[in-house]
Image (cartoon, rainbow, N blue to C red):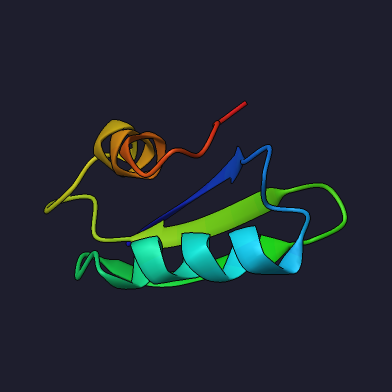
Length: 68
């Protein structure tokens, strides 16, 4: 397992956070995702043998979120 931290511009309000959590929950290779509403920080723990950080970021961006 690997943990990465990314920042998502929209992850500072309740509705976008719920939507983002839903997107991440759909990815079976992600074990855990924690969102910090203060600054949009998202810590993601995932199986790096099954999916890459870049693939996770691409899925987030395809749903209309902005990774900064």
